[in-house]
Figure 1 (cartoon, rainbow, N blue to C red):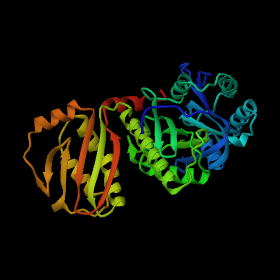
Figure 2 (tube, one colour):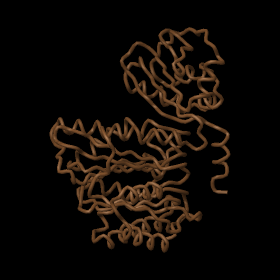
Figure 3 (cartoon, rainbow, N blue to C red):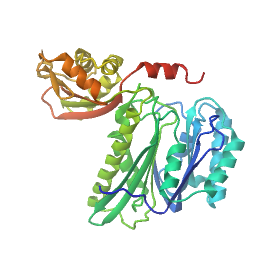
Figure 4 (cartoon, rainbow, N blue to C red):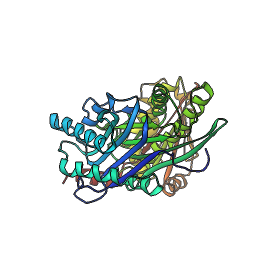
Length: 397
């Protein structure tokens, strides 16, 4: 991937329509000038927002026209009224775009159990569509309008150079809390000018999410509204249909998803560290993934990193209850490159030096080998701070 660029043929905007009492941007629209491919991956929570049910019934598709995203209100657990409101959003957007409501997808994020202010929302959709454009500024306004507790926008832009030509990929995401192991409390949108079938796009997205958004966490709380949507409009005229081109495109989509996903725990509510957990030596990748998830979910591991405490026993013991095969005599652990446990034995190390290294660096690397097998996995999480507890104890009050 080389220099950044926005795919052509898309339009964006972000406005403040009154969903958020703060007056901040709270409504975004991403649209394609022509009907195109869209694929989606959604929350595995049984309790789902109205937008999730709507989108799942309409993706993958080759007739996508627009995505409407509101922030500040999840429209989840809102009964039939919430379902009707979601359909109204799609219908209003379709009317202003000259499209059918089934060509419009909807994403919502915010507080659960509150009805959307529909007068403000529908007025906002009309305004947003009238103000759309394809510039960097329009894109940036959309990235801001989808945020809730995030400190700032999360974006990627890249150009994939293939022997068939250049394909542009861009993306935006939001998420900072309620980040669970099966996706996260997050919305993410990937757009590309690749020319690809809806089935291929869906398959690529399914695999990409397993390597990215399904490997992040903050506190392990899976949301009602999680969604990743990929939209491909074919504007580049580069066809992604041969095995070689599909592999190249999938690699690029996966890399971009990983980069977006990592920005979520890095911006975790109250986070002072982004933690990368790198597992090796497992019997297979699935068992390595289980260990990585278990270590990432441990409150004791998280708080140790918060306090720059090289208390490695918490990490090794967490791995031990992950349910994976583990040869303790072949287990070794490094913290930010410092060997602290080697082949089942404690290693003498300078605790002050390791503690200082943990304190000085925002990114913490945990490298854990649990045997001699070929399995490996990575997971990204944040630490757990007093600020996180304060923020979430006062979230709606």
